[in-house]
Length: 524
Image (cartoon, rainbow, N blue to C red):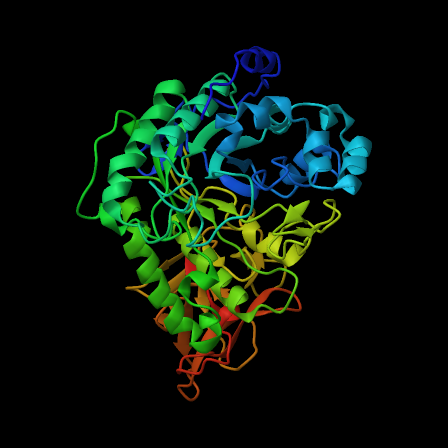
């Protein structure tokens, strides 16, 4: 039976409230998340799991908590989606009477006990919940916002259709207990300024995964959170592993927290079928899947609601062809819509996952030592969508974004003949492209397309502007015809120096073996 958590935890936490300079709390303004002054705040988050069997944030046996928080900041993230099991709020024995040390000893994770003793001795003898508070507090001290994500009911790995807590009214998913647990968590973090949102439940799914139960219970969970803590954003997930919110197209609901309401959506390469990105032409498949993702959740942006992409990611430690192709498509879509997002995951490895000790997280941005970056190219790609491009309080900046690298097109004036190259988006000169006129402008000059393969794209004056077309289903190929023989070339990137060159257009046929990503440019 669920029992309330004693107030002593609340009073203990009051003294740890981090002092942040950002204008909290956050709220919503149409499709944007904004601060107290009405200025756009973009959530660029990383998922930090704390919901597995030890019920302790991963990695604390490998590095000091403060080192991990600082690493998160150094990688460009401003936010953590911190997962937690419902039992942490409904089982006082787990929350209050089991220490971190006891939790690990019960699981025979003795090496991790020694690791925590070395790197984080302060938390070793704390009750599980107090250790959770320490993580939130330290993130706040480093200026990192936190989204508290109720990931599942009982500590463990997630997710499958057969889980006993997969959906409302399943054996381990009592909606009343769930709402009560959400309320307690919201109350305990009510005055903690860096806790800016609560995600109500991760990936609802299963044979009862249908809208009627969602409408019956999900708004009640939201109201419970808002009543307990009116400052936090209330983040609602969809069905089908949180890939589907399309049932909101024709039916909606009333809640008292409209200026706090955010929807979340998940998208992985396997959401579209295992290895499907390898089996199809990337241009056509990307366009098709974006249409599906937009139908299932992206439409909410147009209806004036923030859409938070709270899970996505790919295998960073092997040649994941499907994952690489999908990521290029996803990053282009996220950039075009300037989405808030949370990548899966921070994790270098897990203390214990599905019975295996120190299983490496292949989707993790950190290496198993929890110190080094697992894949710097991947982080560079994400950097292109970390900063906001538009929204309340921002001066919009027109950019031409290259999803594969996470960089933007800018003018290169160092040569006698100005050309184009890639640069970090925050440093790039504005670039504009109007599809109807077909002229690409950068630094008040227009593109003069070369007449030979491999040559750099030059910038010139109005009289020499070349007309570009958006070729392929994605509209991300920018193409032109040469004056010499009328052959079709596309803008491309020379990997040697990141200069923009002209090459034969890739993957315009149904060939599934080629990868067009170097020639994808998204107009922002």
